[in-house]
Length: 437
Image: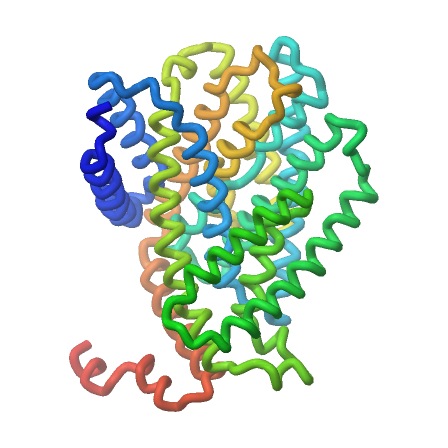
């Protein structure tokens, strides 16, 4: 087909990435999530393809692969930014509690709504359909909270990452229960979790110790290939593979914590740090490209007519109300009165789409309208946009103070963790810079 010739595909992908970069700039100024703009771009592409007769292409296999790789890159990117310190323990535990209770409560209420209003829906299948609708999207949240204070930004990174992992674990636990022969029960589930954590730690130590000895300049994509391989093999073994990615990111980001005693003698800190910094850059770049392509292709596959159903609107609005009522209660309980804009930052996105398409054939309910999925994704994104714009108007100075505080914290962290004094001069401002300011 002429429209999918090599040069047309290259032009299309290149324009998409350039526009995505522009969308990120627009998102920072307006707080409109770049993801929404990418979905709109995908819908425009959908009508362009229809006009040229290219609408018969099945994009799902591409969407699935991009979703999996994007998920891995986003979780790794988040893990590389997380510092494990004693003073971070309470924020981490609070984020975990909010993510876990919010996931289970939202899934239960959404399942009750779906069971009552969707024809042919059993409670078991309702739980399966409700799980993707209850998972926060780290793909949307992490790029969107950069202007918030350090504490709020860290909360959202922790919460969205935990929500992704716990949501995926819940989803595959529920799919396992569809087949009694393969269902290992709650005990088997927790045994699987322990085995995954042990394998993750062993693999993380092995990767760091081996890769610090590789002298070749071309090794970062080799490292990513190893992580993708571990994730895929873990899935084949029915392990919680995303935990492997999370733990590796935490280990390499907090090497001094994990390499203590005799293990410290095996670690070449400078080489390992170099791997960490380079991996951080390439992970962020890869996550940006994959996230861009995923949401544009998702936009191409959207059926807009499904949004016109009154039943879809009713179910979606009820689910949206339940999401924010539950979130309000949890944030007030664990965080106190300062819950803005955290209350509004609960978008659904990449994981929601990915898991929806992963529902087994035997659990598919014909009466479920995919428009509910799209309505909830767009609804939560718009609510987040409104909440962040409102917060920005109320606290216009906070973003500048946040950047200054973060710059000071990053400098202090670098000084405390570097052993090469010449590197410190690179991050400290020169006297000339102070005079200029």
